[in-house]
Length: 196
Image (cartoon, rainbow, N blue to C red; front, side, top):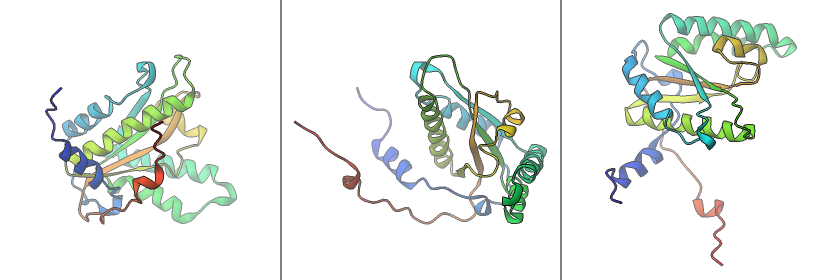
């Protein structure tokens, strides 16, 4: 089978992708919604066991970003108890407003009889498709799993059921400050090769 895609371009795309954080985005520059839909369509083509397609996304932009900021900052304040940190609270209030779009990442549990970890892995594949697609279009993004991500009380705000999971947020914007070149240790140190 002949490939229609240059493998070296795929290699370069994967190896040059970096997390780009909200402070590195161009302030106020908004990604067109049709481009966000393209990223989500690519995410939707991730592999999943039994084709459960267990990923669920909630997209925030415009005034929705402030709604997200208000919700997550207040929920953190209500649930943090003695671990409350003013800096974290302020970051939860300000980070969404630095982004063009924030995509909440949800896991929709199915009744396919799969172990939960397999559906989590499928969602992670969808997020990797999202990250690579954003990079291919010259956008910056990062997957954040801090803040309110693992709080049961957060789920309903994102349309998730008690049996579902909130797995974080993918923050998107145009790149103002390019990230530094990446580093990885040799792959040979992470591989066992068994040939007999």
